[in-house]
Image 1 (tube, rainbow, N blue to C red):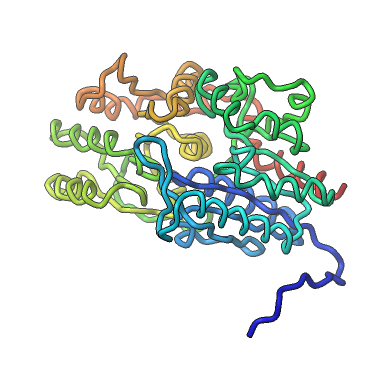
Image 2: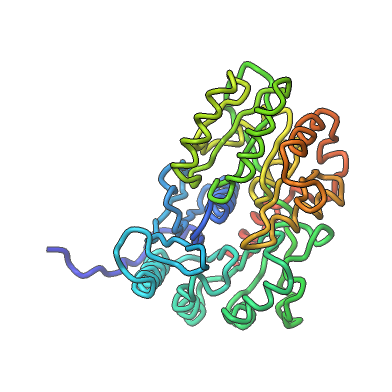
Length: 399
């Protein structure tokens, strides 16, 4: 029989600990961002340990560097009407949220972090983070940071959402700093929010989070363009458009490497695979690639959706790219793609301007060789995010 758990005093020299909260109710973005930061800060300080709390159902398919580990929170699924259900446990959503909240609080109590980095949601999924924030703030040992991607949603929608969730109050009450993983000259994700000046003074613009391919590149013998819908859960329309382009134009080249992502539905993927098989090798497909950076590094160009992590990879590997952004349920990808096109960093297929047609996609693919890479319109500090964040981590854990 197990004895009641008790915390054991740490008599060794204290090594800093960073806890990440990544709610992950949909897609891969939050987990991949947290993982990239955790890898960077532990590389810069080998004595530092990082623990990621994530709801991602595919976290086990990723590798983590030394001194980085994760705890999988019970998963939830977002329905088409915007509601949530428990993914596997047979609990209602309130029971699942309470279970997740308890696990988060316990992890914070026993891990005793010097720093908590919260991704995007100031109060967590359905407020599940609030008990932990209150505990850590009262305890006084842990610095609290809210990390925001470069674009959250349209200003009007975001203002309503943050008001409903009490997010502005939480930002003011709990967080020592707010990090924006982008540049203010490109976009301000808090545009439209009535943030107190005291909160705005805590904001740091880090730059985008650079990605690297490592030292084990994937070997693909032929020139190719990369097709990626990110996690794939909302990528059906874009993938269909690419396949239609190759079907309609038998001379379209180069070869395309299509990464579906882990969340593209099984039935849809079967239908796509049947179409891919008929293209005589002009399109090659894989379901999921945890080291997709290698595919970015070797590609001649990229057709993608407009998620934050994919955008960071386009910038990091300096690839000509055409973004096909989603517009529902959030305008985030469209806003990012539109602004990037205005700045000359990438191009986009705008449904209203260009049409979501095979002809528009054929034109986009054929135009990639002549499209300038993002570096042709470089911005100072564009990819300094990981270095900036690592410096802030050191400053916070040593105070």
